[in-house]
Image (cartoon, rainbow, N blue to C red; front, side, top):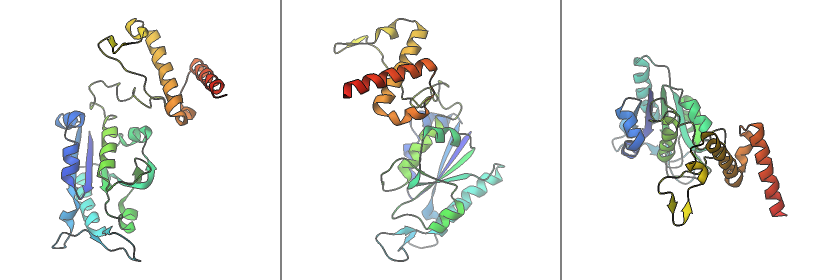
Length: 254
């Protein structure tokens, strides 16, 4: 079972967003748990302030260390009391490592993950140094807070947790399997707006279907994410197919 703990100023945002669809069912069926701690509940300020002006000047406000530390302590104490190990703490920031499918697989091996969601102009560096084990980003852009990135990561990680998906293979054999993008998918009807489902998918010949799907994945990856091909896992025949595609593409460019 995976236990998620989210330190946030907006617990209702993450709890409502993660309570539906696959994750909602996974929690109901006992494969994951999702808890959110409101950092404001751990401040002694009568107005529940959790931020202050930055030393050295500058625009905006900075989240204070003490409320975050107390919120984390509350979560850590609960985890240790239940006999589990000290958790990894993930701070969501554009400065962090860009989250990938490999990271999802790695994090899915944990029992507990704590997500620290910052706001304003950031978080006091001292608390980051004290409790954070991983700094992660979902892309090179700035959002208003860490809640949406945390939700994205929780969704991706949960798909790797045994039991969460009804089809155990589907969490693995989707986009980025073997570092390739997913092949095209089709369903009924056979013809739609004059376009037919590829005949190979109607043939019932599983080996041909699998070969077609792999070739389509290679083509899509070359077209949309060629950077992934450097680490793609290909058979010798698939590597030859890729080289032919590149050769054709170079000829067209010439």
